[in-house]
Image (cartoon, rainbow, N blue to C red):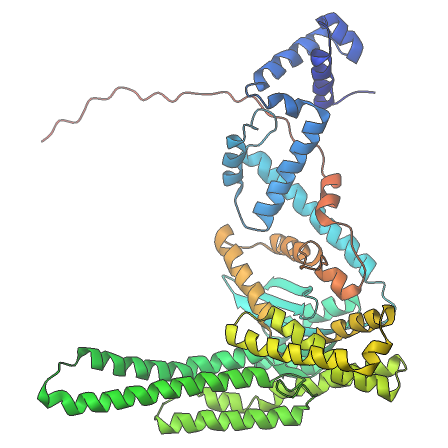
Length: 525
């Protein structure tokens, strides 16, 4: 059987490093090549052995690890972080690998292109396998777009983080969204339970007309609009008062003005504290459970609380005569229903799943009033980063945990049955989503990659989507595809390594010196 160049080199290296001194004729006879080939390989090994570790890369184990190193570097830095092949070439030269593998910029680009092709083939195989579902999987969809030189449409399942649509298009009209969404949902057998988005007309119509599900308002955008409207006006007014106080010179004539400004400063500081307290209440209100009592609440109850808190903001606006030029309060009032409607939708989803399991009334009450609150507030306390919100959620989680442990059904179901109920409840609490911050986070990542790579191609974007869905893992070790479809997929990188051929061989570069001809200096005028 004819051996390739690397296998021949490895056999020559093993022969040269074996005990005893072998002649060129003996080595040629042992490995089945000509004497001139042995001599040529000996010279090549001598040229490569310039560093103490060079011998490692000539062994079979070293060559395999070297392939793993190169592919992992391209995978991690090129695909996931947007580093160019020029930087990778410099990196490999610092590791003294340029004599052992073809690591020129052109070779690295060729390797990157081969890896992209294999990653997209992996995506095709996995989608073909995941499409064979017995019944449609219900998802909590979220849609948004981000703008670069072209428009990138992004749609994902909030509960699992699985990206359904990530495509470069010319526009973000309803027809464009309809085509992309229809293809993604039908291909994987998915059905949207509800869709979260900002209040763009095309996105609202997409949920109602194409997906056939309710369109819910995104709490993240709603609170951001309030902060950019009323919150910014309040901060700017306080800033102007502080600046006038700082610039004011203490004289008898300015004493009255200073006293007036100090009173205005104190009132604005109190108003700012009230404003932040109201925002905190708005955030802790939109939940399926009351944060203080821990009991289930309905959309009607939440909408009433949003109305009362909005009235407090309006009173604050009139008291301090804040202009609110963007009309953030009026816009927030129009979203009361869409912000709170998701609570009833989620409770209907929970009770539908409980009826499908044939639970009696006592068990259903225990699940709704004890098990779900404990896991829900624990999840919120873990995910939240804001200190004030985290403290409030931790208190609610402790209260709910105490109530769960004291419930008689909890003690009766100790062991495996309780673990099964906890797994089911943990899946259900992830189905309640009130913000589309995951989509905004993806948009931010795309923005960074677009900046690093000075643009995004459609193929590279598909590769990034595949890596997100089938490679990135959460703290529990699951990928987005595994969380959504409930079945593991082969490790993407390990599969990629097995599909890739051997690394290209290093080439001897012909060094050409560019001589500068002697030139006379110019004669000054």
